[in-house]
Image 1 (cartoon, rainbow, N blue to C red):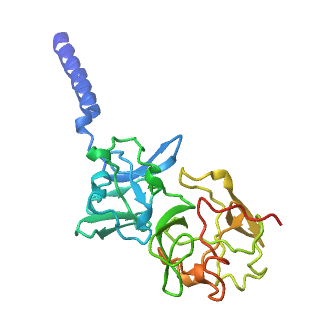
Image 2 (tube, rainbow, N blue to C red):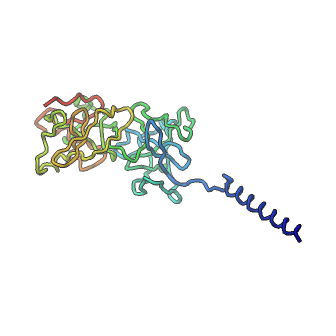
Image 3 (cartoon, rainbow, N blue to C red):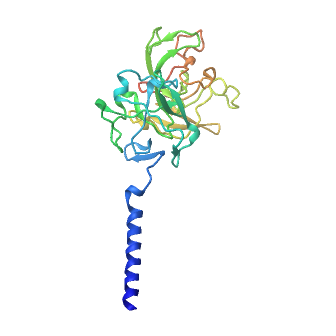
Length: 288
C-alpha cells in the first residue's frame, strides 16, 4: 500500500514538472502579432514590428505617398502589417495606422500618414533591436509615437502655384524643412525676435491665419540639436521655438501634408522673406 502511494506521488510530481516545463517551452508561446514600442538610450521610444525590427519614415514621403521606388527599395523595403491579425502595443493607437498602395500596387502600412519601412543595407535586413538606419542621408529616421518635429524633404510650391528652390528662386527640387508629426509645414515670422512672438494678437483673433504651433513637447530627430528648441508662453498658450524663432502653421495650407504655400505670403514681398520655412540651417532669430 505504501509502495502504491509512493508511486502515485512520484507520478504526480513528474506530471507537475512536465507541465511546468511545457509551459516554459518557447515553442509553446504564440508569436507576437502586435506593432509595439521599443526603446534605446540614444533614441528613446520608437516603433518596431512584432519581431522587434525597427520601422522608419522617409522625409521624401511628407505628402503621405510612398516615394521610395526602384533601387531605393533594396535598402528600404516597405513594411506591411497583416490587417487581419495585427494588434497594437501600449502607447500606440490603432487609428494612427492605415494602409496605402505603393506605385507598384503593393500594400504599405503608414503611421500618422508616414509610410513605414525597414532598413536593409545591401539587401540584408537589419536585426531586431538595431537602429542603424537613423539619420541615413539626413532623410531616414526611426518612427516615434511622440515627435514634435519631423523633417520633410519636399518641393516648395507657393500659393501662386509656382515651384521654388531652397533659395526661394523659382525651380524644381526638394528642400529640407520642419513639419509636425503629421507632415504639416512649420514657418517662422520674419519680424519676430528671439523667443518673442510679435505676430499673434493678444486675443488670438488672427490665429486662424497663422496658428501658433502649440506644444510643450520637444522630441526631434537625432540629427537636430535639441538644445536649440525651447517653449515660450504666449497669453497662456505654449508655443514651440527653434533657434529663437516661434513656430507657426499657415492657415492656407489647410493642415494638408506637404503643402508649404505660406512662403509666398504676402505676394507683394519677396518669396520667403516674411514667412520662411524653418530647417536645421535657419540662422538664430535676432535679439529683441
